Image (cartoon, rainbow, N blue to C red; front, side, top):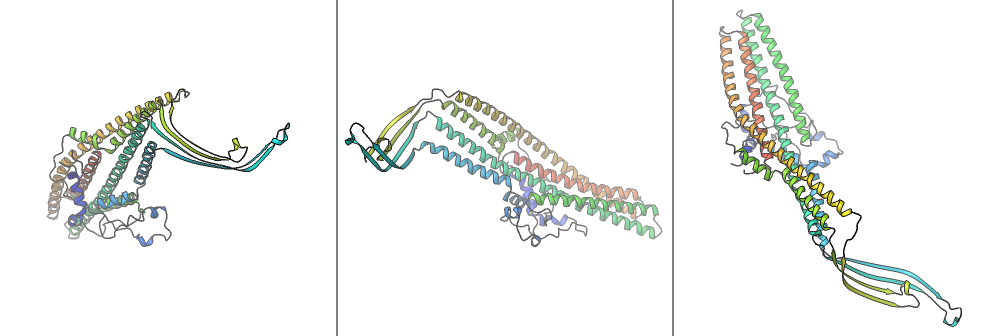
Length: 477
């Protein structure tokens, strides 16, 4: 089974949320969008606006889906930009290390003024003097032919760091996706809780009106009216608290999407048709094995371990001989060190140079110790990352299975609470039931609705966490 199927109900439910919105209550107390519009933005763009100028603005009529939120979060996220910069830097480091296989060609030139006086005290006829310019042009070629593994290990070291940088980018992308999904579902759950509190307030108001009608007709008690009024006020207070939590969660989501917290966002309603029939999860051993082979955190740690081992090889190989091809061509016009009269000297040389390290003050031995210790540190890092991934997979696995059981119980609870409220309301209107029975049924119904939306939100988050722990949204165990 493809883990992508675990996420398909979420994405499909969010993208088609408008079609499922008929089950959501719509009252005058439903939260309204913030009055902020893009036209209210300041004329001079700041750092946030410059960084997100290519990411688009939220639509005022189109609900924001999880896919749109993730795209926006990834568009200007600093972690993904840093990961891309690290990849580019490491690609350049790999290229620089591969350039060691090529010869180096160096050109040089010198220009000077020469003045020479030669005097012979015993024979002045041999006295001479010279004044003129001196210049030299030279071309040197040095090509390292054999270094017995130093360059090969160095290239493998840089390639290992590049592999780690690529895996770190995947990890950054998946981390942003997970954080955005959790923030999105939290805001969506807060929106559902506000709608549930609004419905509970409306039910409490309806009960008060029923009691008020009975008291006005002389068949109801004043104490019932006061209790109903108190319950209505309590429901209104709960709706105010839910509205505060919703707008706080919406502001956190806006910041995660690199908007101002007061920007107007329209969320897709939470679908209540998710996971009616529990799916079959693969065995936990298969999921853990897949995660250890595909999770970007583990892959990055494994690549850094391999790079550290290559660094240790470089340290060992640095004490071996080096064989180079050297060539030089020099043209000197009146060289300063040979001047007596104007002359031109041209010299060319080609040969093989052998360099053998003999004593370096124990630098090589200390570098070997350092690289070995770093390899041990990277090995411990890989072990820690693997254990963390196993824990994440297990927690998500248990969370999904528990969420499916919780959703089944919540559906039964909501059906029972709805039937109980309808029965209690009918009994009260007919004079058989009491006000306490009616208010208790109303409170149970409101609680059942809230618990169902909380269970749906937790199940969606667990799906995303499991997919992220496995290393890819569409990974196949």
